[in-house]
Length: 94
Image 1 (spheres, helix red, strand yellow):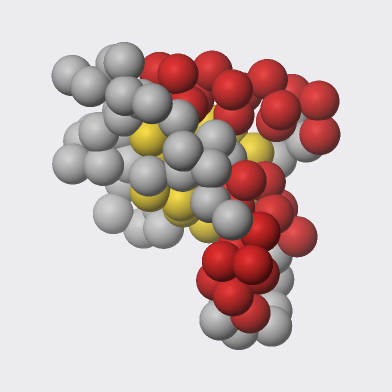
Image 2 (cartoon, rainbow, N blue to C red):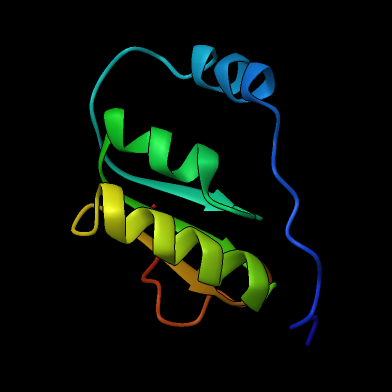
């Protein structure tokens, strides 16, 4: 299940561009599919009360978890799973 995929970081300018596209308001939840190292995921905490980052790579999630624990452990949750696996989410969660 892709557990050894390499972790790839998104350049800062691309993260800023993505965040610029988010309408200015506060959200209850945000979902980052294919979160990689969690750089965008952690930045989404400025826009949402809870942020879930999902990636298939255990390498990426391990790094994202380490960095998230240091910065915002209660608000951001990196999880290893396939983007196709939506088990455990109710229809209204995101």
